[in-house]
Length: 157
Image (tube, rainbow, N blue to C red; front, side, top):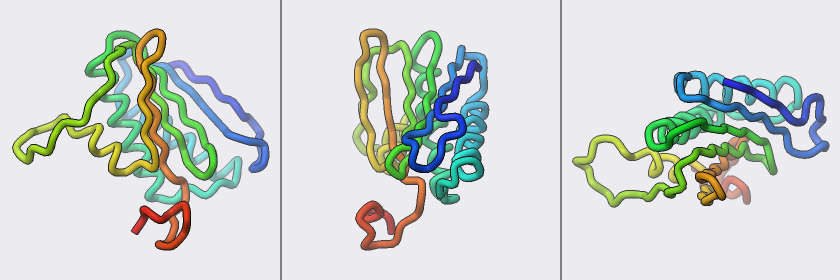
């Protein structure tokens, strides 16, 4: 796993804070979750950003689902980027497979292949784009919990 960071020492008003890491295929999914957890800890401790327990668990779930799918369906390396932006943590995964994933129809008898459905259900936004090589999937998770009636938390209950 190779890592790079942007925004070292940035304050709250200095813009987005991002880190990236590349997986060559031999790492465990738990490494990706640990990477995300460490970034969220840094957002709290070094940058003073609110990161709820719900957000921390949700980001780790999304990272796990997206990296698992990339490892399963795409040959070659995987790039994971985490970026705090506008009160959300954006999880972006690039892999070398150009085919975009599709959500399957409901099937209570199907075992597995629910990762995209889960990701869509827990994220504020989900974008998928083909790249000149491969594809990029970006999911955004709100960092702070909101009460019903808050504009940013209107989907939260």
